[in-house]
Image (cartoon, rainbow, N blue to C red; front, side, top):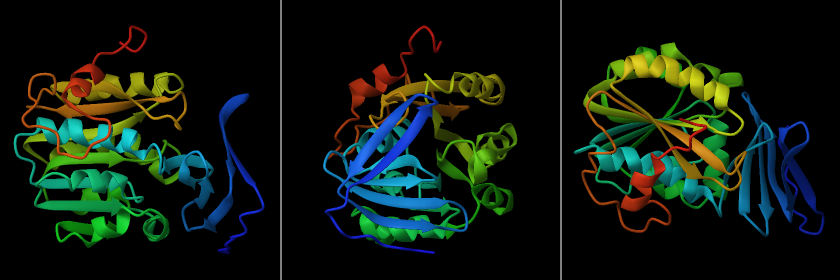
Length: 278
C-alpha cells in the first residue's frame, strides 16, 4: 500500500550495508515516498547532504547531488566515441538520469525501456530532470522487461546503454552472456554497448566473469572507472563493448556543454586501470 510521510520534524534513517559490517547511512529530513511496486520497494527521502535520494529495494540508485558522476560516465564515453550516433537504446534507468545525458547529444531517437512503470512515475514527480526529458519529441518510453524487448525487437541501434540494477531480482538476466549476445545482434556496424558493471572493490568476481565471456564476443572489451560517492566503495566500473570503435583512439567529437564531471582528459584517464583490476 502506498503511503506518504511529509512531516519534516521526524528524522528517518536509511542504511545500505555493503558488507555485513559496513555501508552507508542517510539521516533524512523526511521520507517523500514509500511504495511496494509489482517489482520492488521504492523509497525517496530528502537529505541535507545529498538532496533527494532514490532507493530501490533498500539500495541507493541516485541522488540529486552526485547523480552526474554516474550518468555522465555511463553515457558520454560511448556517445563521444561514436562517429554519429542517431539511435540510442537505454535499458533500465527509469529515474531518467541516463536519458537526460543522452539528450545532450544530437540523437534522432532515444528509446528508454524500463520494467517498472512506478519507478518512472515516482521519479517524474520528485526529480526535476525526468519530466522535460520524457517530453522531448526524440524520446520513446517503453514499459517492458529489457530482455523481452530485445528478443522481440527487430530494430538496430548505434549505442545501447545498460543502466541496470545489481544482478538480483528482475535485473539478473541483464548481466548474463545470453543477454549480451542478443544485444550485439541489435547493433549497427559501428555500434557500441556501454553499461554499469559494479564495484571493483566488492564485485571483482562478477567483473572477471563478464570479462571472460565478453572479450570473446567483442573486439574491444574494456572496463573503465568513475567515482560515484554514494555507491559501494565510492568508485564504479563501467563496460565499453564494440567490434569497430576503440574508445582510446576514437574520440570523435567534443563533449556537450554543461557537463560537471566528464571531459576529454577524464575520458582517457578513466580507461587506465589499477593493477588489481587489470
